[in-house]
Image (cartoon, rainbow, N blue to C red; front, side, top):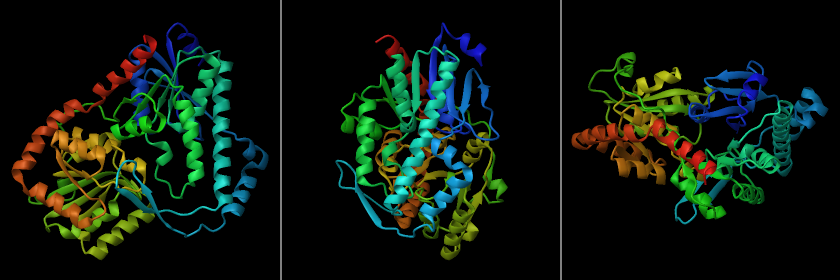
Length: 447
């Protein structure tokens, strides 16, 4: 490790920070790769757990994983912490109050059910998370000092590492970039976040985002929300797109499932969990013709998969609904390319969802398959500008079905979308997005 660090002393060195195990974070991997191959030396700090290397070189950058040892877990030990957690939480509450949030500058609303957490439970969760964050922050700083690592940039991912980036910026007087992969405060959570806590989070983010030398985010709507909330300059917009791919290869899901040529295949790709609109999508199947087959490519908790199968059974569509996979990540676009239509029915369960531009949309584009998406701002914009599909109301199964039918049965419109998506694939790829990343670094270096 010291050899790698010392060899980079005269280069432009980047400390990259991410609060996960760095196992499947494709966006961070792409950014680190892009910087590394363009003259920057990157050391990426992530979390360590049993089974992962504490240090490893991935392509041209170094990953260092920090074991977190928060003070409360040191004192209580594993058994004591487990006992205390059980004492505080006990049986999980089944309270699911209706919650309504208003979308800023819009008459649309977000309605969803989430559990209400008691003050004691919420306090326990916040303190546990705060001590865990602090342990990671301390571990990173100690490693930097131990190795006498001289760096030129700090690049932190999401609000969970924003405080650490801010502290390093204040101590070493080096520029830092806040890379927000989502509207972090407004994420979909299984519990209701108290308004007072959100208020404190916004104050925390506002102070630090204003000190950042650059801000990156993933959608126009989130960028606009940052500008509205914090009165900052418009962030650098970098979509989480895949690398450009050719479509000469394909794995036929039709052959795998032994479906005849007259069957229209509608495919969803991704995780199976709440907030993705999958329950509504299964219900929509009963409103489409019998020659339509829905395929869910991915994985999820067994309990949720059982729920989806139960909905299909109640709707009488089990013979036209298939859960397939999981498959290797590099095979996903090959499977997608054999579908007639790809779909993303994400629900408006949180402001972050409403403003999002899921990376699966760009995966669909690279697979060259027209798509049906929820009628949210970013998704509607892509469909309107690129003319590559249709949108629908994700809360209404019949509307989902009607939108799919009208689009797929209109041969002229569908063929135009197929042609347009070839152009979209040339536009929405990582080779283009990385240029924005490099331009931001260059702008900070040469203001």
